[in-house]
Length: 187
Image (cartoon, rainbow, N blue to C red):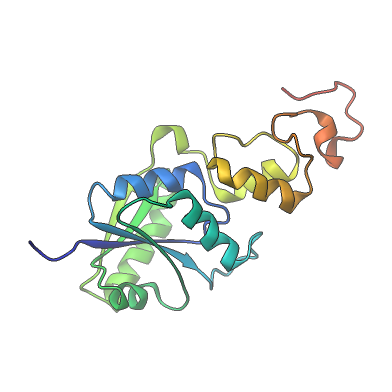
């Protein structure tokens, strides 16, 4: 038996989306182990704490062989080397992602030449999804079911103070932002 093929899939996962989930599962077709590296130092103001983000990913992949979830801080390539990962797994949704990802891959290669970056195209049905989009829609009471794993829905509901029947209610009454809606619904 050869050396274990380990990849790191880094991100903030704030929250984990169905696109992230798909990429991790597809990564398992290429690698023996995919370590989901949940970034502490993300330069963003996350909705969920690091502990919550780790718990979300752990919950979704509970019992899935080959998936490990670990928080990390500092340089990604150092995290990869510490965990014997030879690859960084990244998803590309559109051409607009490529420039940023290409620059990061080259910098990581400069810092640690033994770690390769492997790009996977997003599944077509997830190409428009980002955690930022989802948070914006959810914060206004919009229906994000199917765009995030089911276990993320109650966490979003709590974080945004949405009613218990969200996102099924999907009416103007779901969100204070739509209090003066006269149509009685958006669906």
